[in-house]
Every structure is written in C-alpha cells, then in structure tokens.
Amino acid sequence: MINKTLANFIMSGNLKRVIFWSLVLLFITNTAIIYCSGSDYDFGKAFLTEDSKKGKLLFQEYNCISCHQLYGLGGYMGADLTNVISTAGKGKTYAKSFISYGTERMPNFHLNQDQIKALLAYLTYVDKTGISPVINFEVKWDGTIMQKESR
Ligand code: HEC
Image (tube, rainbow, N blue to C red):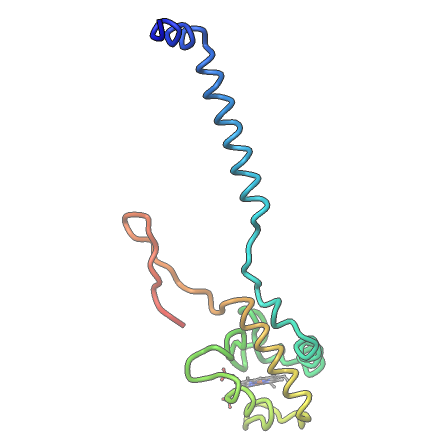
C-alpha cells in the first residue's frame, strides 16, 4: 500500500517538482544569507581619523607623491610608502625621523609636531588599505597558489 503510493508519487512527477522547488528555495535562501552577511573586514576605515584626513591633505600639499609611491603609483626617487608603517625593520618611529628631518636626498619640510602626527596617521591608514608591491604568487600544478617572496 505504502509502496504503491510512493510509486505513484514518483511517477506523477511530483517528486521532481518537490526537488526542483526545494533547490530553488535553497538557492534563494543561500543568496539572501550571503548578500545580507556582508564583510566585517574594515579596509582601514577604523584608521580614517581626523588626523589621517589632515595628513592626507599635507601629503598632497607637500607633494610627497612626486618622489614616493602609494599603492605602486607615484614618483620613484623615494620608496613606496604604502606599507612603511608595518614593514619589519621600518615602522612609525622610522618614518617619523625621515618626515621630521629629511635626509641628504629628501628635503626637510620643517613640519611641526601636529603635521608630523597627521602624516603618520595618514600613512597608518594607507598601510591598512593595501599591499604594495603586490605579493607575487605562483600557481602550483594542483591549482593551489603559493607566495613566491615576501615583501
Ligand atoms: C624630493 C623628493 C622627496 C619628497 C618631496 C619627499 N620625499 Fe620622502 N624620501 C625621499 C627620498 C629620496 C627618500 C630616501 C632617503 C634616503 O635614503 O636618504 C625618502 C624617504 C622617506 C621615508 C622613508 C621611506 C622608507 O621606506 O625608507 C618616508 C617615510 C618619507 N620619505 C616620507 C615622506 C613624506 C611624508 C613626504 C611628504 C611630506 C616626503 N617623504 C616627501 C624623497 C622625497
């Protein structure tokens, strides 16, 4: 009796319909979950402070980009500053000494403490927003990737 009902159910095409609509429903639910969950990666937003905004204006005013790159773009007399804050062996104090005093090749802009603090805040913000130079990856035979060299 039960077998017969089951057979009828399958034969009638109802099962196909149930499977089809279940899959549609799963697809919609999954899409909705992914769409609504978003990303909690903040791309440096937490570091976009008043100081860092001031620093950005100073970076433009003193035309740092004429000698330095951000995200790989800019002049090539000085180093790329994108990750100067987080690079091992460099960092805030290191950057501060260049910005405060210049060197033989980098001009001393005679900035005051507030301006220096703002520029460092801007460089800290930039550091969170990208990696430069771009990390070099190698695709292995099985399709996975491996970092070629670290910056
Ligand atoms: C005339 C070109 C020039 C300008 C303009 C300039 N710099 Fe530089 N900067 C250099 C050079 C060249 C060096 C490397 C200095 C050296 O090795 O003697 C350097 C080094 C640095 C470093 C250390 C980078 C590292 O990774 O070693 C920082 C940080 C820096 N500059 C920040 C700034 C900021 C901020 C400004 C704008 C206020 C600026 N620079 C404007 C030429 C410049």
